[in-house]
Structure formats: structure tokens, C-alpha cells
Image (cartoon, rainbow over all chains, first blue to last red; front, side, top):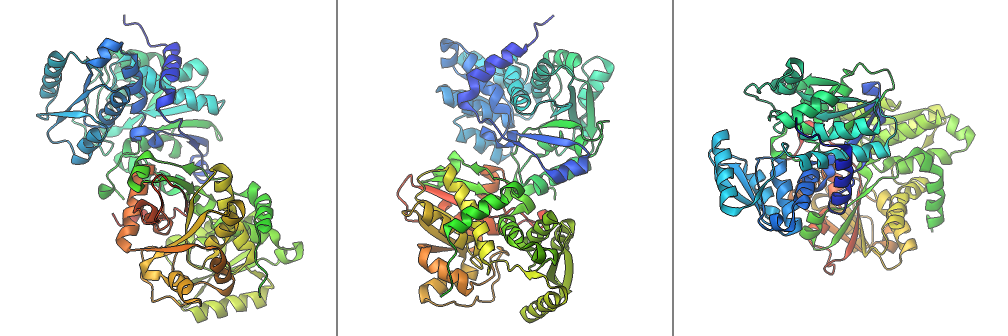
Length: 316
Length: 316
């Protein structure tokens, strides 16, 4: 049995990372509340440094390394927000970050990594090439692997988003977060259940990438279908660590269609006047659609996970 | 000589409207600061109720009416943010708002007015038809005309945006706001010069609608060219009241091209992760382009005036 991540780990992470991240605001909208028939509290991680919550876990992981380990740097494979976040976290500690990215990753994602000082190693766009390239880098440099979610410090760091939300907004009935590899949802569920045992923790994912839904239903980790979804940050699958945490603490998984994701994204942009990426809007969709089975006027916290979108390719 | 609007009027407006509006946040971005070579403080009126600063002046004007006058309602002609704002302000006091709109106004603007309880009277899309339709309504109803900017209470209300910004951020060297009919810039300049006589007040407008620039240069109110600009909120011209205030208190007018407006808008969306309308981005452009003649590291306040955009027609 793996030792669980505890709320004490989240608390420790919070103290460690506070000087390096934003305490993001919580926004509300009367019009969205009317639409949902509930009171919605949006935790705006799209305003977070590097544009997503990923900086929380990455910073906690980098700061948790010993002096000697830190000097040798960090490695990850990611084509998304974790890559930029780890680069920035490493830069903050003055240590190198090597990022394995598939050769077909968008130029804008590579530019973000470089802007934060990350060193990109390209590989073929296959899982096998990604793993072997990362392994080779680890051997060569002696650096530490910081996996995007299969990592206790990363999970504890992500949990700080819910800790902040619950400190600020009391008596939430629900808390919603997107689920992909499960790092964010694991951290959120640990904080939320520790601070408010009666809260319902809801994971949200695209119907087209509903492996978490199927995994929690079947009791074993199901692999993703070949997932085509506009929510490009939500295509990973659970690992044993996150699966174990979610089984214990998540009350329901809600899945939403591609149209529902775009509709939620549009409602957030139009009503809150904020830029949220499709993966970030996935957690808002079930609330806006009245899908939670919530009593009228229920208090619902929603983690808007990120705001990194290519404005040239909007779905509106 | 018209009696001027004073900072005491702004202070009174602030107390009057505070329970009815948002105190909007001030956002910052290290990346935008680097781009500008200055420290930028963005006052986010795009998050304001009804999506723009216009609710400040409209609310102050409606609340300043006597009980008897208020009962008979308010009238304005506007196809933009003032129409929605006045509707909402009247709704807040439980009195009718009649809004004269050109028959070709976008459906989305009409829907916003109706959502806030405004009653639309359509007219031919000419200045003459707009005026005569409003006059007819005023005669018929005994309501009060609340002009979008040629109105002392409206100007005092708009000034509260700068008052809040300067209360929160000390020692600004510059404050930037868009200029159209001059109501916002008048209010801003009154507050800014009262609270910090050394601050430079900069009006910002599209090159394609540079009548304020030409008016302050020539010393008389110049009419607009047939203005085609993406900043559709900035096509009005000064009136004697606003012209008099601006002549005394505005230090410079900066004009920006259509491409520069879109570039500033995109930078705000990408870096601050917020939805700002083109007219709102006009005030950010001179700062982001390093046009102010500011010393490196100067402290620059920027009023982001609104966030009402049609997401189906973005210029990216």
C-alpha cells in the first residue's frame, strides 16, 4: 500500500510555495448564479503564474528537493502547462529544467517553456519515445524526475488551490475540478475533505476522455479511448497513486460533451470577462448545466484550472 | 462660464453609488511591465456591473434625481454601454428607463438593455432622428434626460474609478483613460489632479477618431471625421462641458492605429487573461508601446473601460 498524501502535506506545501505564487482571486457572477440555480465561486487559477495551477505542484516539488538534488536539476515530459510551470519553478530556484516535448508540440507551447528558461529535448510523438528520452536525460544529468501528477509533492502543491478557496469561502456544498491524470483532483479532494468532511467532491471530464469516470465505476484503472477533445489538457489517464486517492475521496464524476465545454467556456468569457482554457471550463460546465443534483441555492466552488489558449484558434 | 464639476462631487458620488457597484480589482503583470519598461496598474472596469464603467455615472445620475423626478423615469440615446448601464441603474431604483436606439443597433446590445429592464424605442439611424425621438419621449413622459457624458452627475460618477485606483496605488506618475465624448476622461482628470497634482493625465483615442486630439490642439471642438474604428465606443465628440474640463486638466492625448489597438487587446487577453473590449484596450496601447515619454520604471495607471465584446467577431 502506498502511503497517502495528507492534508498536513498540503499545509506544508502552502507555506513553502506562498512567496512564489499568486493567491488567486475568487470571482462570482449574479447572472451565472441565475443560470445555474446555485451560488458559484470561481477560483481563478487562470490568473496564476504561468497561466495555470500547475505552478503550485511544480514549485512544491522543486523546493522539496535537497540542495544536492536540486543542483542537478529536474526533468519532465509534458507538452502542456506542467512544462512551463516546472521551467519557471526551476528558474526560481536557479537550477536547470530539461523538458521532453514531442516534436509536433505547438510552437507557442515551446516558446512558453523557453521563456521560463526550460531546455527542450524533442522526441518522436509516442509514449515510448517520451519515456526513453526522459530516462536518457535522467541518466546523463543525475536530475530528478518531476512527473506531472504521479508525484506526492506535486499533488500536495495542487491541493493548496482548494485550501485557499475553502479558507475564503465557508460552507461550500460542492467543489468541482477537472480530472486528467488526477493530480489536481487528488490534491483538491485531500484539502476539501480535511477542511469540510461534508463537502461533495466532483471530478469533471470530457465525455470523449472519460477514463476517470470508467475507472472509478469499474474499480480499476481504465485506459483512455483515443481521446479527441478540445480540452487538450485532459487527455492523460490516472496512475495508481491518484487512483487510490480519488477512490477514497471523490463523490462523483461528471462528464460533458464538446459542445457543453465550448458553451461553458463562452459563458465564462462573456459573463466573468476572463480568459479560461477549454480544460478549465470543463469543471464549470456541470454546474452551469444544473447537473449536480444540487438543491437550489447550493454553494458550489469551481476550480478554473488555466487560461492558456491560442487566441488565433478559438472555438467561437 | 459653466460651473465646473469638483472633486467633492466625485467624493459624494462615491458614497452614493458604492452599494450598487463593484469596487473593481487592480491587476498587474510582470511580463507586460517588461514589455512597457514601466510598472502598469490596470483598473479592471471590464469586471464592473453591466461590463463597463458606465454604471458609475448612470447610477450617480439616477440616484441624484429627486423622488418626484425619479418616478417619471429616465431617457437616453445610446447604442452602447451607457444604454445598458442606465437601464440597470433605473431598475435599481425601481423607475422606468426609455432607451432610444438606432434601428440597426446590434441584437446583442438590444438584448443587454432589455435584460436590465430598459424599454427600447427604435429610430432611424441618424443624429436628427435620435434627438427628436428622445425629445418626444421626454415630452410624453416627463422623464429626465441622462446624457451619456454631457451631464455633471455622470462625469462625477465616472471619476470614482480613478479615485479608487489612486486610493489603492500610491504615487502614480501617469494615468491613462480612453476619450470619446470625454465623460470618463473628465471624471478621471478631476479625481487624479485633486489627489495627486503632479500626475500626468493622458487621454487615449484611435487615430481614426482623433477629434479630442485635434480639439485640444486647435482650442475649439473639432468634429469627428467619419470615424471607422474597431473601438466602437470611442466615436463620439466632446461637448462644451467636457471640453472645458479636459482643457484644464489633461496633459497629453495619445492616438493609436487600428493594428495597435488589436495588438494591445491581444496582449491584455494573453497576459492578464481577461476579456477587454477594443475601446478598453485603447488606453493600454500607448503604455505597452512605450509612447508616454516616461522614465524607465514609471508607475502608470490604466483604466480598462469595459469588456463587452461579441466573441463571434474577434479580430484575432
